[in-house]
Picture 1 (cartoon, rainbow, N blue to C red):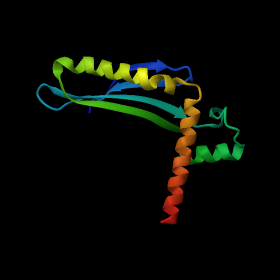
Picture 2 (tube, rainbow, N blue to C red):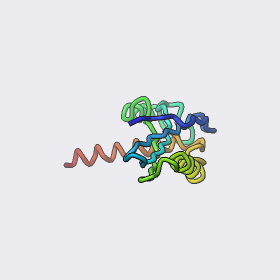
Picture 3 (tube, one colour):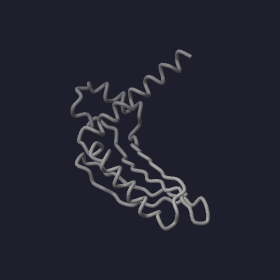
Length: 131
């Protein structure tokens, strides 16, 4: 699948949001138009500004998640004609920014996402140990 970077946006939370066009042709003149927004978030002690974590808790988070996690939001539209592809992609990007873009730009977003991912992995590990 061909992957094109549409744009890279520096957010107020000091992370970059990269918008990708992952569209693919599904017929002679038809497309599945796919927009993906991705943000790579380094996982380190410096990330935790609003949560009062002990150094040991912060180290456990880094050990569990690794040195980074990736936020990704994807949206797609199927059976788009050639002539409409670019307009549909632009609309998907605009809709993302209108609905979700402001949220992911917030300074607390990376920290909250990392903590959410950490809790989910710990819970998954507990469930697997019970099975």
